[in-house]
Every structure is written in structure tokens, then in C-alpha cells.
Image (cartoon, rainbow, N blue to C red):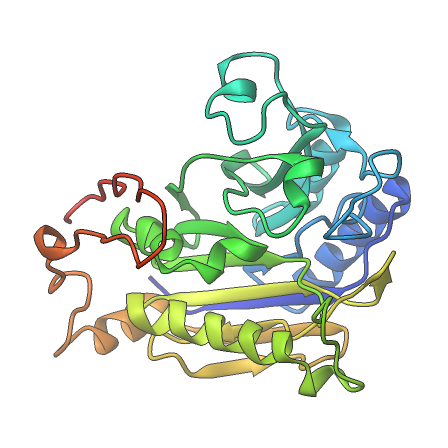
Length: 307
């Protein structure tokens, strides 16, 4: 494929849904003028994130939206020939998915979701699987990781805490994703916040996970994040694009803005995998989890494709 321009957004998106949609559309239009081909917005861009991780106020949750509703339609219309990933709260269905696993039964108000679109419609979706602290009080958990085809190549998406778990990024990488969009509303530490955001331990972990997930899978990772404050949470920013060797190619640091890079994704991944091809050299037959001392039973591992 030819080189593409990738943008990762760091910005604040609050509870005002109409304003959020207008802001997303405005950023898309600006990015198009700058020649951006793939644009990744933060988690919860349409209506904001919850205001407290430990004890979310269930009367002040983000508005839940239908994937085929007017808000997503507005993003599709604005996208045109661009590929755009955006996070939102997706309305829960009443079918098997809503009560499928017992993680969050009865169903909460919705899923913490992401959708990837172009002007042709929806290309892929993801429902956040891993839930930190009290997030399960507010949202129903997703249960799968999948890759999907887009005009800029095969992609996968992660939301927030998903990227803490190597298995999440690995699942979409072995499903053929060469680009992983990691959409976040990632705050500073809620228990031991530093006086300066760059010194916060969550700031360090956010960058560490981004680099590790890219390097271990030899893929391009596009990491977006919220900025500003929502309730008791102060978001870190730090949007970035990470190359397949784990190198940070562009970043907003703790400020709002857009990190952009123009690169030939396929060429860079081929170069990274020329000698050491991590996915091809895995030994899935040896990866049998053992329960640590004092821990309860370990669930059966997810079976991943071997391609």
C-alpha cells in the first residue's frame, strides 16, 4: 500500500452530546484538509466518560447511542474517504449479548464501545472487554476481539484498560491487524495522583503499554486519549503513534491536539518482521496458564488463530 497519514487525537469531550458530535465533525473536516487518511478519536468522544471509576453515579452516565443512530450517521457523513475511529456509549440490546457471560448481570445501561467508519458506512466495532475498578457498575462488558478490513488496511480496536492485557492486542494481531487503534479515556492515578501529569504513574504506564503492545506484535499502534476533567477524573492526553519496533513516532504529550505521522505501514511492518517475526515464532502449545499461589482457578485460555 502507499504511505498514509495517521492522526491520533487528544481532546476533551464532555456530556453535551450535540456539542461532542459537532466537535468530532469539525476535527474530521480539519484533518481532511491536512491530508489525514486514518483518524482515531478518544474513548467516549460522543457524550463523555463516567465521572468516577470507583463509584460511578448511575444518574449521570453518558448518553447511550444506537450504532445506526443519527450521531454515528453524522460521523459517517463527515468521514468521506477517511477512516475514522470514535468511542461512545452503545445502547445495550435485550438479546443474548446483554446477558451472555454473567460478568455484568443484570445488564447495565450500555457498552463502552468504539466504531470505525468511512463514508461507505461502518467498517468495524468493538465493545470494551476489560473493566477497571467500578466501571462494571456502569457498563456491560464485551466478550471478543476481532480485526476488520478498512481502506487503510486491516485493523483492530482496543478501549482503555484492554491494552493493559497483552492477550487483547495479540488477539487482533493474529487476526491479521497491522494497525491497532487504542481509544482511551485514561485518567491520572485515582489513588496516588502526582502534582504534575507527566510524573503520574499512570502517565508512565500509558506510554509503556502503548510501546509494548506495538513492539510485541510488530504493528502500528494509534493511541488517542481524552484531556481535561470529568467528575473526579483528570485525563492524561498523550495521544501518539507508535511504530512496529515500539518507537514513538509522534505524540501530543499531555496537551490537547493531534499527533500525525505519514508512513507506509506495510513496508514498516515487513521491515520489523524481516529477521524476528514474533507472531510466526510463537509457541501456543506451550502457553498453559498456571494459577499463582493463593489464587483461585484459572479460566481456560482463549484459543487464538495460529496464522
